[in-house]
Amino acid sequence: MRLSLLELIVAAGTASVVLLVAVAFSLYGLRSFAAIGNYCELDAKNRLAADVLGRELRQASAVVAFETNLPVKWLTLTNTGQNPVSMKVTWDSNARTLVFDQTGHPSRTLLAECDSWDFALFNRVAYPSQTNILLYSATNSAGQLDPAFCKLLSMSWKCSRTTLNQNTNTEGVRTAQIVLRNKMN
Image 1 (cartoon, rainbow, N blue to C red):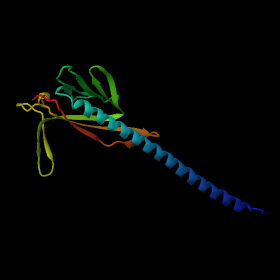
Image 2 (cartoon, one colour):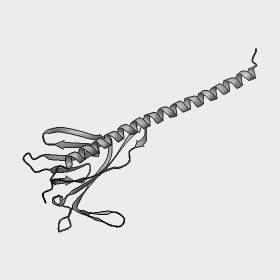
Image 3 (tube, helix red, strand yellow):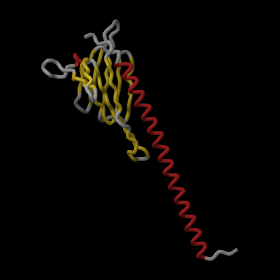
């Protein structure tokens, strides 16, 4: 069977279109697979950071000091007991890292590629309203934020990562509210 030139051109064009569609679907599938893997790893690291911070900071008895100005925000806590331990959470906006330091342990980078980290200090009083629960800032009688009145820490952070040179995987904001269980007052 002999093919004419026209039939050969049509067959080559059809084969090219089919091949291009197959390549496009393959690239889309690879990109989606990489994005899902990236998202799962990012989510696992966020959960681990929330678990570590919750477990360790819950044992604190007081917020000692804090800094909210960029480029580095930090929060220092301590506990009372026979062996006092100092804990510090530091976010470096330039390095995009969230680091946890604890007396007697090496520094631990909980999150890399952390775009933002914020915290708020609240006193022990929480009042339910008809629509939500109201928390009151840990302020002194002059209305200034005072770590001595802190009973509840609220932290939130956001991490993002690039996939195939595109910022396609942005993790939503992760929030942790931690009650200082060993608060003395």
